[in-house]
Image 1 (cartoon, rainbow, N blue to C red):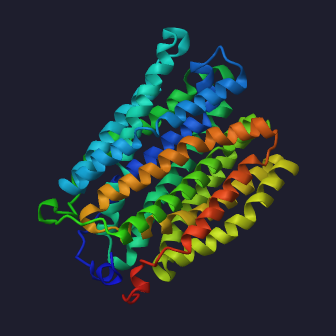
Image 2: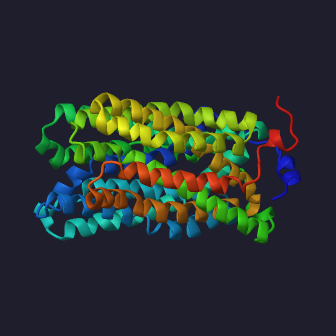
Image 3: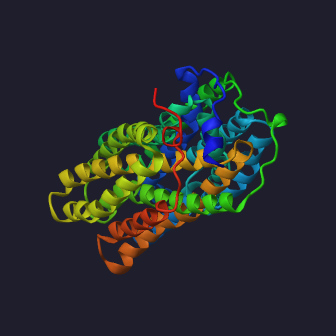
Amino acid sequence: MTDATLAAETVQPPALRLRQLAAVVAGNALEFYDFLTYSFFSVQIGHTFFPRQDSDTRLLLTLLIFGVGFLTRPLGAFVIGRWGDRVGRKPAMFLSFTLMGIAITGLALTPSYGFIGVAAPALFVCFRLLQGFALGGEVGPTTAYLIEAAPPLRRGFYASLQFGTQDLAVLCAGIFGFVLSQTLTAAELDDWGWRAAFLLGAAVVPFALAIRRTLPETFEAAAAKTAPFTPDLWRMAFLGFVLLGTVTTAYYVIDYMTTFAEDTLHISVGVAFGATISLGLTGTIFDILGGILSDRFGRKTVALATAVVYVVAIFPIYYAIVHFDGSTALIVGAGFLGALQGLYAPPILIGLTESLPREIRSGALSLIYALAISIFGFVTQFSVKGLITLTKSSFAPAAFMTVSIAIGVTAMLFVRETAPVKIGLPVI
């Protein structure tokens, strides 16, 4: 997609009400609420489905099931994402969110190992696979919709709501998890506390689906022509895959912090959830700020500058968490990492979405995103736990994330700018 084409893509977007914008990004919010709730309560979920295993094996098996959900994401991206290019963004968004609601409800209501034996983890895996399929088809149509519905000079702000709602979900999950950890006993958390957290997320599904029905369509598939995959487009797809891989790795290392604090540093559950609240609060604020800054200064400029600071800051943050007052350092460190991730991630997704031709945007973005998050999301938390167990080092998460962001810095050097303000459109 050329700079001239990007600058010219200024079709008057449909006016969206606040509740309609909220309905568009609700799927992304629910994705992270659910995924993070799973991560936060992985110890309790392990007790429910693998009660006969030792603590390390139980947690590894629980994280493995967490990763299984990523296997079907590429399939969902291919089916639902391409459907968004063939019949429109709106029906694709409706389908993916419906399936997501079914999956998260099923996860919450799956009986324990004590009730149905090995069928319990097997059923749990099935719902994770369905959830992965739904999520694979959610990001492409919704992000394409936001870019197409936004005024050209506010695309960064609109699309940053995808990440902003992710971290808002982190904040909500952290608050709810903290409340549960302070009011329920360990046995109650194992029995039904984690299930209540899942069901709270599922409760928003009917309302968001009702609002999604009112959305105007941004893409008339019948009038669109097929866009060829040129060498430049393949190059952008590869760079986008690498960059989204670094975003995913960083997110899931940071999101593992609650489990890391509880399982490795032996910090109380309440303090661990305090770190989650800090992460969600700063992430929500800086996600939106990252989108706004990318509208003003460019996608590449904001992401690259943040990535450099990121690489320098990771080890000092983990050093403070491990060697100083664990509670304070954990909460402050999580907040700082959330701020950096907020400035780093949105410009990358926004730039990639703008680079893709409109007629294949939903399907291509879905597939690139799904492959990146499937591969890196599948291995990250499992690998971090494995490295901690193998090396006996509390710095394994920092090393894992530093290497990832350093790769992102390298890839960013080869990405071209896509922000309208940097390619010919004035700021108004």
